[in-house]
Image (tube, rainbow, N blue to C red; front, side):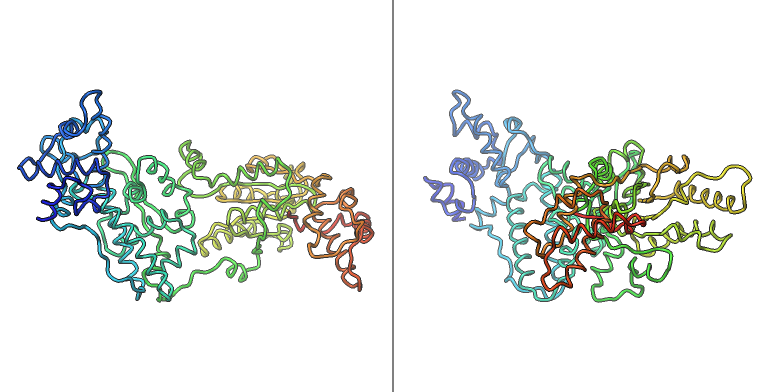
Length: 577
């Protein structure tokens, strides 16, 4: 008991043997000393009001200003708040403390008895396998849970939250050190890097993984429990809910999912779990799956209907009319968590995660319709499948109607097999969208009308993002026009846009004549696709020269050829900045 006696008899509390372990101020240590003196005399509980008035002046109510000292000692875990002989089950405000009593915690009594509460962890060594790593991570989840239940008053308040936090810090540092020392890749750490998860997302993942490994009772599947693990105050709890709502990264990237359960009070709660593919990857890292997950591009290679496009640019790279950009940005914002939440609350969207949009891109060839569709796909991190609608009529007569259904059926089948939600791009969709024939008409007209009716029906049922491109909007059937959420015009670029297109399409590493002038090129009313073609044709011409220097004349010759062409330029290649 030498540490206890030394502490209560110390005239200068700062010189006592345990002061350095208390990690508190001298004033706070004096309050602890007074309680310990009362404790050894047989007085277990000390009223907060008496404690403060014993040490600070009553005049001017100075002692009230010292309530924060008691609050800090509670947070450090050296004292416990009591009321009518029972441990308080919730945290009190400073003024509420005046009507309660406090008593030394078990942590304080152990410190007085043993002289130290330092936590000694085993020697830091590399992990021998991923299970050893997971054991440390699961210990961390357990500590986080103890801290969260301590704050809510659902656990033994004799535990020190300060000590728990200290142990958490030490364990986190230990895990980081062991990971650095481990030469063999750890499957969970590799997964975290691949998915670029932040610390809070990692903790949610590890808590759900612990539930799977340990066969728990499901406590870590509950939304509120998971939020408690990553939140240290009420504000954080509100903010962190977004990590488990529709549209959150963990859900949209198919790492976790949830089931909605009707509880006994009529409300709906969510129970979260790791996706099966993720589970298999973590639990059996060396076991090869009998059936490998098929990639979309590999599946597309096995059929002839669709083309798998590989976007290289995002919407930020494309020169667009401001109104066009605004419309597309609104489509992209549908994946925003707050926007999704509003749409769901208003009954506009159901539980389905993602964007529902049917869009028409219309405008002259070479204005960037196809490239914009591809850039939208890259911005949304979606694959894109393209179908050339001109193919449909080349299929033998009598089968065209069946082949319209096949477009959509095969698209769904490919998406299902690859477990992705690609964008469907219907290029040159004029014949599908044009006005239908009226009256008896020929057999070809009837077939065409039937084909369009099926197309209309399929668009109505389509879930996800569908983009149809066409050169003319004026002759589109009104029934089709109503089915599309957005009709976006692609105009030929103005002079200012043409300057930007020339600036960013010109070869960066080439040599230019000192009198070379982009403004001269931009005077000519070319589309983005035409500018791209002119630059390529000029490059081939200049490259064969011994002195390969670009001049105005070189480009103007190709511009003259392009503008005099009867082909209205080449097929759109899109354009980027």
